[in-house]
Length: 167
Ligand SMILES: CC(C)(COP(=O)(O)OP(=O)(O)OC[C@H]1O[C@@H](n2cnc3c(N)ncnc32)[C@H](O)[C@@H]1OP(=O)(O)O)[C@@H](O)C(=O)NCCC(=O)NCCS
Image (cartoon, rainbow, N blue to C red):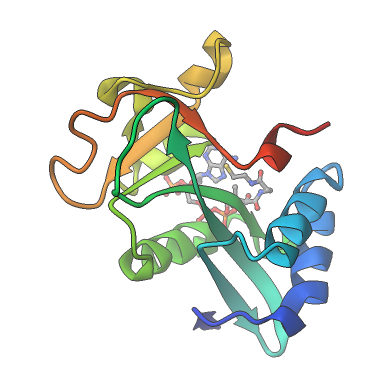
């Protein structure tokens, strides 16, 4: 299994295939294709098994509504492990390796809270950050400071690229 921090434009079809296989709809595949095409992606990491992409995680910049900051805050996602490889610890391994490599001041995400708490994320509400007006979405919204105090003074509504909100 090879951890890869240098996915290129040529890896698009592999990423697309993995996301279409692991997620129930093509939303994530289309989102990633759009972010890649517009060069909005901040970082992408993968896991390869003998030439097949079996793990993928993406990071894209987010902002905080009405807050002007130079701090780099990234939204993590999508994250996917190929169906045939799930439940073997690879998701956690990819996340841990990836979080060591990614350059950011803070990271936010919407996801399974149990899974992400184990790698250091906390409820985004602890930092005064929200995703939307929806209570369930906010309950699944997590954040992590890459250095202590990185999110100090930065509370508010987190805004992703518009494609994250598209149907
Ligand atoms: C979610 C996903 C990335 C996890 O990858 P994985 O390789 O199967 O996970 P791991 O084997 O590394 O599991 C790590 C831990 O998280 C737990 N876990 C795995 N999937 C979980 C889920 N969907 N919800 C809550 N906990 C989960 C595991 O039980 C395990 O716990 P343990 O450390 O106590 O044993 C993978 O299942 C996937 O790609 N799913 C489809 C796409 C998706 O839903 N992505 C969104 C992620 S928020």
